[in-house]
Length: 442
Image (cartoon, rainbow, N blue to C red; front, side, top):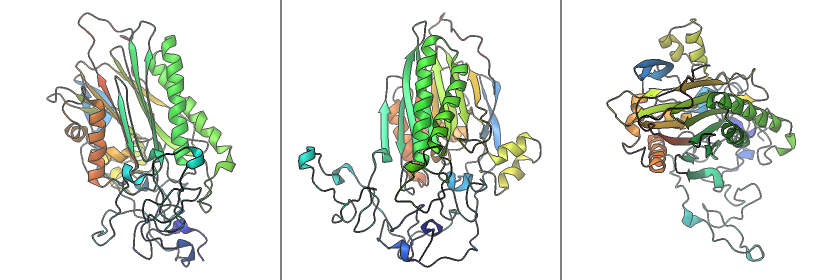
């Protein structure tokens, strides 16, 4: 008998890729607990990317890199390859690393359930027994799996959309992961002078950690709550965002103390500290503020597409660290197997938390794209992101977020995908910003 089901990368019956802790194949129902122990000589294949360059905002260097190559990576599976918390020989979610070169033409196609697959709600006393959306016969256990075929049932977080007057966000499970480990929070706050501040927080759970979905949800909620409290009190947005990231880190740390909340249907997962990355943007009174820790990103796309777009964040990754320290050139660093291993995250086992923040004052209207690597792996360069987002993004942010998620799914959807779109309007002629003297810092 297998002692750890997460050591399998594919189902022995149908070769469907497996997720961490699967007890049954979600496609053919193969009982994975009866599979013999595999040998311990599986190689780990990490996927690299080409080096970034730099793009300007307002004709000035932002100090943030914009990749020149569109070569895609594949999310946490690549980025956590060199993370000491990831077991040797396994990718971020406990499976073998996906190398993107396997011929999947003969693999079964899994149709994602639609709203028609869900039973209609009924009063508690009359609630019918939930039926599996895959086999239409099995009863669903308390962990959300079919007792007949083992198929995981759709969760509420599999696909989420939200729209406010000045911001919209969409999050999707993707086509490979068995759950959505991303989370977001969007909101508006009234500044002391009466102007509206728009807030977007996007978090990506680290798949090699325990309860990454809870970590991302806790971090997004905590950061958003602090910004909602501090901005109306007159705190400068850049300072408020710095404090919000620290509050998010504390919220994730609290989860580590609660070992009783371990996932019951995943008893073989190594129990380590919940972890996630975070990226956030605030549009407030003519100022654009970004803050992050990890490798989720913020892009600036001007409405006038003749002006250059830019990436406003710099990844906390092994490759970026080597280049910044002058130890390796960009080409050498990004060709290394460790290139996408993240070096910064929120979690009790993280190094000292050092949030990055920066402020910008664009000289023209545009949109801000806040996203996880589930999107930017398919639109890595700033120019590619500008081409992927609709031209009317400022007027239709929800539609634009939906289009960007679709772009990632069409590209393969190998990771969870989350994106928020914030229009950046110009202040009326003669209007001054309360943050005219805001400066960028890290």
